[in-house]
Length: 224
Image (cartoon, rainbow, N blue to C red):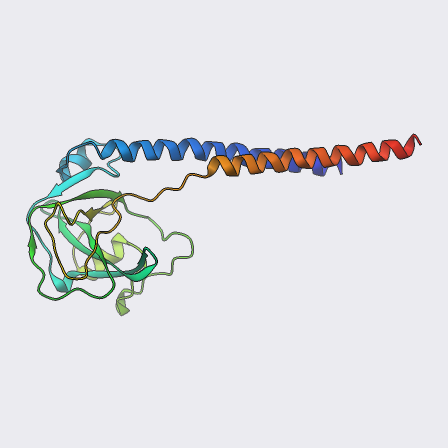
């Protein structure tokens, strides 16, 4: 019993320490997002070339033509409403494009889409693999659940960057399309890691107290 209690005590405290590390990481991430909001938008190529990590930076892209037949409708939710994250592509260099999320829509967009010039938005990291229980994409059925650069590149028959994508700022880009609303440009980050850490530490010391009580009761019986 002593060995099991010691192992459990160490594991619970280890989880508490891990949550404190997560707390520090989350605080740093929030500070970085706030810092990038104060930096004026720059051309996307300059931002990516100049920063080791360009996540969250505000960028501009000029002369982006949004063609209706080159849109990807990715299933998603926004404020509890189901619909689509509408993905297109904008020029990055002479060889590649960069995936650009126009916004969120409950239904597919109308076919008469305009030329957008310039695009203003915010860079986000592309996921290398789907998160959690996200279903796989089925490109042949036009069913999309996550931003897979390789699958999108193949479906649209064009090379795209595999590290970043752009969330378009609809207001600054002067884009108005019926039914299209702003996608979140920054992550809604909750930060409850201190609560989690205190919970794990509390469980560890509660276990130790209970074990001490058991030992005390046995001691009393032996010496009665």
